[in-house]
Image (cartoon, rainbow, N blue to C red; front, side, top):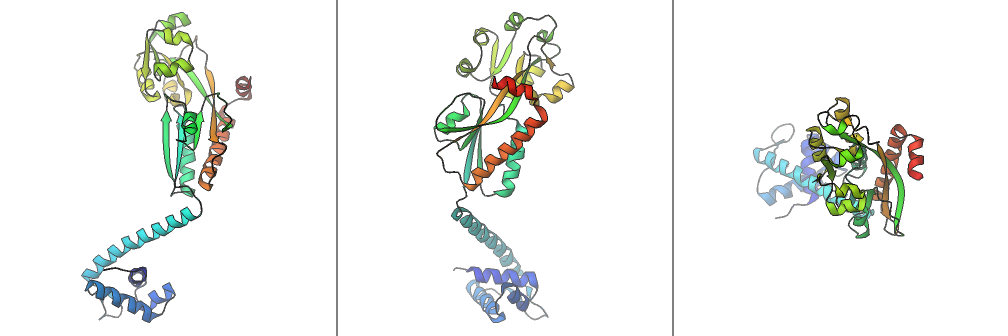
Amino acid sequence: MSFNSEEIEALIAIVETGSFKAAASKLHKSQSSISYAIKNLEQKIALSLFDRQGHSPSLTDAGRVVYNKALTIFKIHHEIQEFSNFISEGIETKITLAVTAVTPTPILMKVLQEFNLKFPQTQIELNYTTHEEPIDYLLKNEADMAISSSMIKHHEMERVKWNVIEFIAVSSPENPACLEGISEDDLNNMTHIVVGGRKTLAKKVPSNVLQNSNVWHVQDFLIKKELLVNGLGWGSIPKILIERELEEEMLIPIPVKPSVHKQLDMFRKRSEFKGPASSYLWKLFMKHGSESRLKTITPSVFNQLDA
């Protein structure tokens, strides 16, 4: 048994318009073709779909069940047709992003929400990473674009300045790390909480951090924040992640440690095909990254990073 789209469309149109004549007008067909489609459908399933004794056709009990199923079939058919058109236009079915764990989540969410409105059929695969460089994903063809603080230069990569993250060294008010007069040598003897494994840190942090026997390694900044708030150590963390904790004085800046600004850049391969979806996503990142910089970062900070 097989149903064709004309039979399904006729059934739905009759119910929605209230008559065979109105359904024919809606579908730009003759009334006889609508009647023929319903007659064929009823013969195939050996059920009467409409009670035709009244002024206008009304669904039988069996007809209501079939109608609900028809709506599902019609929706799936429409989605398949849309997807087919989507692919034929060269629009990507999936885009993979690799981003450093310090990427500002509010900006990322704005970008993805706006992107989803224009390209709802394109899947996004998002890789947050602390142990590997996001651009390594690009070089291994495991990502289409990346956000990283790495200063590496590679001939295959297109690189654009994107945003700046401010890191603040903090501890809870109960932790001795925030006391006046504490030196950096004193801090090295206190529990220091860092994100990433020891191998990763060897590439990114000063040697004195690795020499500190009181280093705690955690997987992400949310865990790190919880440890800091509960007085279990000190550490540097993106300001954007602890604004509420700073305002409520759950965390306090460490006087001996000045804030540090880290440049985040967008990367993508020069040689890769730039489809309409990935091109639009790149433009959104540029737009929202630029807006955020203008609101929060002073020109002097950019000068320091460029120096």
